[in-house]
Structures are given as structure tokens and as C-alpha cells.
Image 1 (cartoon, rainbow, N blue to C red):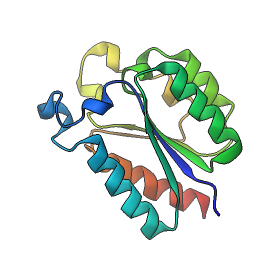
Image 2: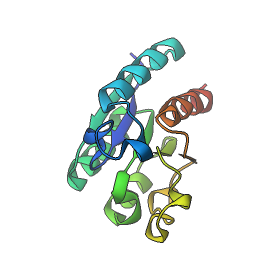
Image 3: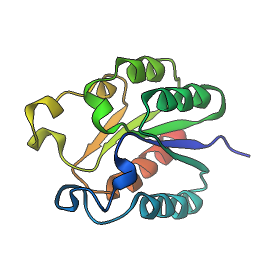
Image 4: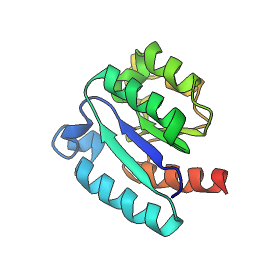
Length: 145
């Protein structure tokens, strides 16, 4: 079995579709997971889709991916702008990393313009709504083949 692509989601993404739909859209995180699962199957990929409001859980999954994963797609949410711990964990991962933001963080508050995760990411997708996850999966597939 091929190594999975880890799709990791940070704080408040469990409220996707409910919280600020004018910014984040009306799709739920379950809708995103389902769409990613269908596309992954079409691309011949296996995914592990996770969400946590806790920084340490995200770090644990990134460390797990070091041994078990082929790539990481991460929407770190607000941790993008604050978490050196997530950056350090990603720096220890050898595979491709794609950072995803549903909204365009560069058109929002100034504190959202900087992402620690971007320092490790091989690509950043922002402002494409939840479609950004599918774009990231397609990019990971092309990098791994």
C-alpha cells in the first residue's frame, strides 16, 4: 500500500460551513474530506484527513507522517501566524508540504500576512476556497510521480 498523504487542519476548521461563511464558505469540513477522498482515489493516492484545535496534536501527526506519510497538506488555521512548533515539526519532514488557506490571508488583517508554515512549504494555496485542498492534492500527486 502506498504511503498516505496527510491532510491536516488546525483550530476552528471543525466549524467550517458554520463560522463566517462569507469568508470561509458554506461547505463543512466533512464535505472537504469527502471531496479529497474522491479525488485522492481518482489520483491513486491514499489520504489521512485530520483536524484538531490543539497544536500538539498537529505536531504529533506531522511527526507520524515522517515515518508513514508521502506528503503533507496543511491548513494550520491561526497557528500559521503563531506556531514555531508546527514549523519545527515540518522542517523534520522530508516529503512535499503544501500549505492551504481557504481565504486570501494577504487581503485580511495585517497579522495574518505572515505564516511560519510558509517557510517550510513547497507551495502555498490561498484564497481559492475549499477548492484549494483539491489543488494541493493535484500538486502533491504531480510532485510524487
